[in-house]
Length: 173
Image (cartoon, rainbow, N blue to C red; front, side, top):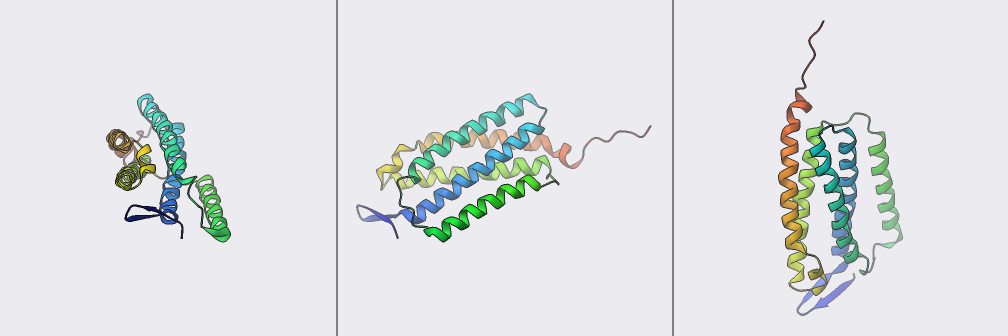
């Protein structure tokens, strides 16, 4: 088990690395889902927000990658192989998914992801109290950004409810 001694606290890098890798993977999934929403959306404001959201996801991911890279990777060859296979299976599933869920469900998934991201920033802020490596992440600013993202995502979700579950039907001629 890889650890980093900081004062009277020990940061378990292997556990933290797994946690951060899961958030990195989730950021890729959110980016893919956002791209699908952009492709199918006709509202210019929604498209603009989603494009900005993708750019912000990419920027945020750089913070996580910069934290994970110097940590020892104690996962072992078998675990690394399983992780790669899981990633490939997830991509394949998204490519063959022909029955797309309602737009409101996709926006809801992104909103839940934003909530998880806010928890992540809070975790890194707390870790910065005992390990200066985490003080390089502007956790307060990223939490504020996530709050703005959440508000906009929930607005888009609200607007998508009727079109997702009760679309306008054309009268029969």
